[in-house]
Image (cartoon, rainbow over all chains, first blue to last red; front, side):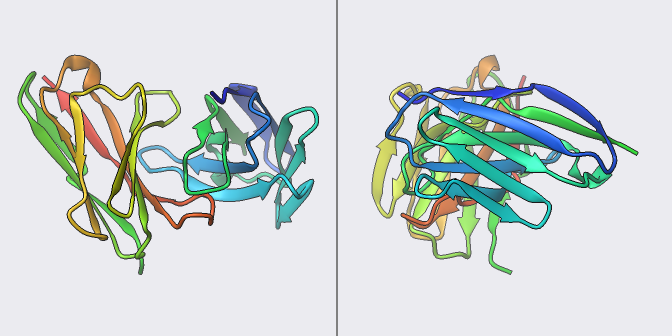
Amino acid sequence: GENVEQHPSTLSVQEGDSAVIKCTYSDSASNYFPWYKQELGKGPQLIIDIRSNVGEKKDQRIAVTLNKTAKHFSLHITETQPEDSAVYFCAAGPDYGQNFVFGPGTRLSVLP
Amino acid sequence: DAMVIQNPRYQVTQFGKPVTLSCSQTLNHNVMYWYQQKSSQAPKLLFHYYDKDFNNEADTPDNFQSRRPNTSFCFLDIRSPGLGDAAMYLCATSRVLQGGGIFGPGTRLTVL
């Protein structure tokens, strides 16, 4: 089955700096890679996703890159703000529904 | 607003006493999922319904059951809760082939 690793487990950045979270996956059949943000006491919220026919996707301050050959994908947040502080989960799986495997999460702290 | 609603938000039960958690959605999504999330861990998929078709993850304990009486509602039944079942239970919905879905706010279960 699919196995997703995520690094780092914790990340602290100064407000305005960039943050990068990296994930690797094991199953070459995976072709859907979502990223979720989870704030304390809330359910995860989908913030961006990418499919294997695309190498990069951007939405305002957030971007995701995918290297399918190396089985790597990364989340990039630019101009970080305190409200970006949360736990971020990457995931990988087949391109239907939500049958994907989550990474262990990265706790991001943006320091004012 | 279309959304995923979970009730109750907090549930306390006694060891071995059956408990039911509920989830409803106004999104008309055909797939509904139940996840278990323990402290500082990623959500773990327990099972999902694709319309009326039930799909159980291989490692989901028999102690966990689910019902989906109609498109809008889905229930999680824990027949004999143990201390290890204390966790946040997340419901999510999606449309097939439309990727990452919508999570509810979760129900935090405490087992005494």
